[in-house]
Amino acid sequence: MSTTPDTPVTAPIADPVGIPPGVTTARAAGLVACRRCGRVNAGRAVRCQRCHGPIRSRDTQSLQKVWAWLIAGLIAYIPANVYPMLITASLFQYDEQTIVGGVIELIHYGNYGIAGIVFAASVMIPVGKFIAIAYLAISVQRGRPANAHRRHKLYDVVEFIGRWSMIDVFVVAILSALVQLKAVATINPGIAALSFALSVIFTMLSAMAFDPRLIWDAEGPTAHE
Amino acid sequence: MKHRPASATFFVDRRPLIGIMPLPPLEDLIACPHCDTLHIDAPVPPGSIARCKRCGVVLFAPRKQALTQLLSLSIAGVILLVAAISFPFIDIDAMGFENQTSVLNAVTAFSEGRGVPLAVAVALFIIVLPMVRLLALIYAIGPLVTGHRPRRGAHVAFAMTEQLRPWAMAEIFMVGVSVALVKIVGLATVTIGPAFWAFVVLVIITLFNDRVMSRLSIWKALEREGAV
Image (cartoon, rainbow over all chains, first blue to last red; front, side, top):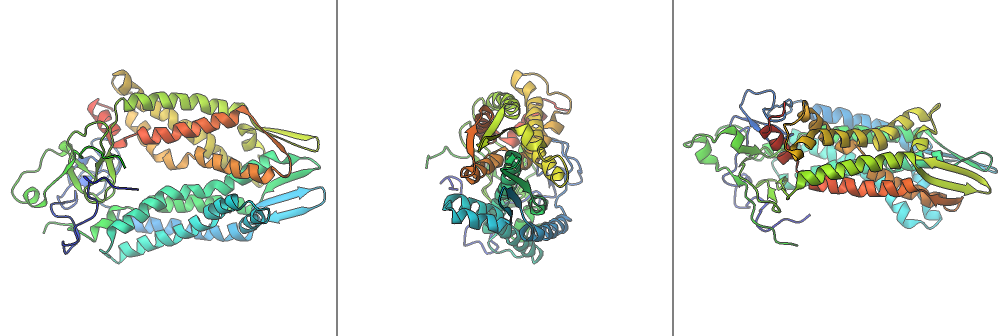
């Protein structure tokens, strides 16, 4: 990501509160903005004039939902790593493979690039996401005004990247559909495939429940001065 | 880095707004969806990008003929998706045992026992949701392109398009396919069918679609044309 010279995105350092001078929020002006279409509505509106969606100044239950989905995602991530993802049966052997086992096998056969992709999608992204969402939620709960820009970027990355964890689920789906060669070899999905898919879905919902406006609230005036 | 023309969205000065000056009409304002900062919604010339002054999120990135492009890409997407589902996808052959799979087969292959929930999820992510999303988009913006009044429920359809965006996973599926192919190569001979290429093009179209789409502009257009 790069920024164009004409559109400053960083707040001036000189400003003590960290909010750029001359900036006001819809909330500070006593209005309610729609997160879906950007329309600004009168303070007491509950439906957006433009897109007819439900609106509220801040989603007060946002963090509760974030934590609930995040914990569900964490719980589902445990069986996803313990149980086999892929069950391979061929003429001479029966093999159960976990997520990490699959990565190790790819390394063993020298497919370092593919091993890297699978490891990133199935281990690094989910774990990183758990930590990132928890960090964002905690920082908002404590009302920390510091480095809002970095936290906002983190939120953007988490929102964008979460769905890519699904790669391994699709790999299992394709392999088990394709490799059904009677006596020679069959591949079937293990329990972990489903729990991993659920874990990804739950953490995506967790990230979506987060109201990014909360990141900025601690920084600037949220009411009339 | 290409130097872009100046942003045409100006932010509201705090003090005059709260203190002395009366508020501009609400439809002339736009609030950043990420940080709630108010901006005056001035027209943005095509080709330039208007970012939020505070958090830097792209608010408007209008292009010439964006809606027409979006509509034609979406129609092409529907056709490709139908092709990608029905034609043979991948064909493998190991010691004389052959198995040909279409995407539909891939989904229905484990339609018994433990695989069912997984099959449903995969079907949703790679067939149903992408299709619903494309059709809803065509429904919502079609009349805007041809200069007609938006259809009934156009805003519901467009809201759905936006909400389904993260759940339509065609591009992720294709990366999964590539990984799966690498894993099988040692085991069997793999032949790639026409559906595979249909899917590749579909992914490219989807990426283009997301680039061309300026969702705040579409919402404004729907409001302007009197969507109900």
